[in-house]
Amino acid sequence: MIHFYHVHQSYQRNILALKDISFDCLRGEFVFLTGASGAGKTTLLKLIIREEIPLQGQILVNGQNVSSIPVNKIPRLRRAIGVVFQDFKLIRGKTVFENVTFVLKTLGIDLKERRKRAYHVLKQVGLQHKTNAYPLELSGGEQQRVAVARAIVNDPVLLLADEPTGNLDPDMAVEIMNLFSKINRRGTTVLVATHDREMIRRMGKRVITLDKGQLIHDTGSQMQIEET
Ligand SMILES: Nc1ncnc2c1ncn2[C@@H]1O[C@H](COP(=O)(O)OP(=O)(O)OP(=O)(O)O)[C@@H](O)[C@H]1O
Ligand SMILES: [Mg+2]
View 1 (cartoon, rainbow, N blue to C red):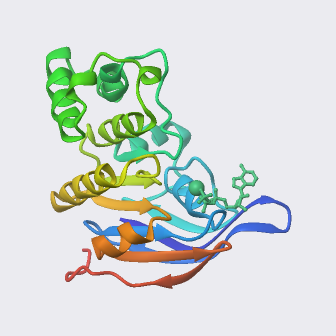
View 2 (view 1 turned 45 degrees about the vertical axis):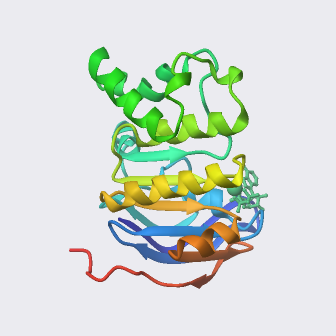
View 3 (view 1 turned 180 degrees about the vertical axis):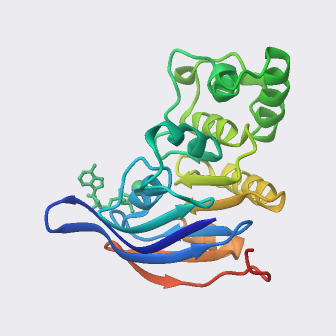
């Protein structure tokens, strides 16, 4: 599902944000990405969705070489990927319902179906009663849960989350992780960047550790079958 081969990334000359990163993440895996602040977690996620292009190396996502896909194919790549950003990126002028179903609307899915899907995902994150609220009327944790609902509403093949539980109380954090786990069991590949060691330990999934841009540890794939 995700293939990194000797990937380097840099924002400033002579300073590498990622150094020679190679790993494979199979379809259906659940992987944590961890490491200190500045280690390169967000950079790695940005490369997967082609928000950035690597300085060097190859990245395949869902069978596509993300550096070389034409610009007009980028929306299609991103539609297959659900993303929960570190800063949520909710649209202030739109309600929770509109934020969650924005992509569905662009795909031409009718209002009745959009309502049905929004209700379903908002219920999963415990926010069905906030459907008509605006982001600024919500707490940080609620906004984060809206971002999670939006990321899963279109049944993505890959779910990326950047510190998705940073603003949540411990119980809600566990619930969101359990929701990710449930989505993963239904077949979605999940990659979660987090500092939360306790959460990582509790979940018992594969862990990739970055340190100053280098991949220093990978507990390895837990999948029994090779990807075909
Ligand atoms: N847009 C940018 N311009 C310049 N440098 C950047 C930019 N984005 C990230 N960096 C640098 O790249 C390195 C990796 O940053 P990145 O955001 O990937 O870290 P991170 O592991 O996500 O950290 P955090 O846990 O704090 O979110 C850091 O040294 C950071 O300062
Ligand atoms: Mg980050």
